[in-house]
Image 1 (cartoon, one colour):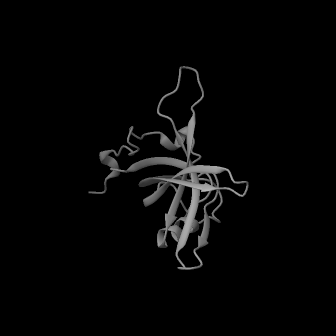
Image 2 (cartoon, rainbow, N blue to C red):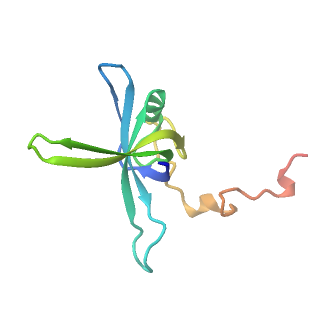
Image 3 (spheres, rainbow, N blue to C red):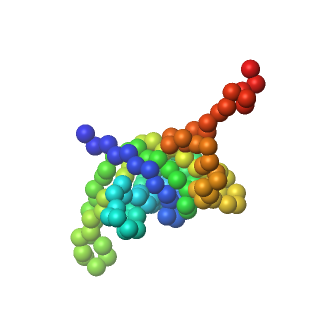
Amino acid sequence: MNTVIMIGRLIRDPELRYITSTGNAVTRFSIAVDRAFAAKDAEVTADFFNIVVWGKRAETCVNYLAKGRMVAIRGRLQNNNYTDKDGVKRYSTEIIAEEVKFIDYGDKKQQGNQGNQSEDDFEGMDEEGYRAVNDDDVPF
């Protein structure tokens, strides 16, 4: 079984290319995923992962994702090896995305980053991110 699920923020804008022989779209980007643990009084650390998205989904990612936006990825790990121009054998690992969920998104030209929220934005929310509703708020 080879399944990976992660949530992180893009560390740069996605790059779209088309494969010349087939015309297939491919997008590459990297995300930073915070580690779930940290020593007391230590800074939160993150791991960085390279993501590859194919087809129509690749074009959608380029249109709606940008640096700093949060995204959820479900896919599989893939190892690659190649010899660089100096004859040195190189290895890389990337995640081939089978599903991409935009957690915060918008037109790339839209100003502001939805990921930067103040504590006031979370007032009245429970730990799952749902806002509490009073009976007075419901119209029926």
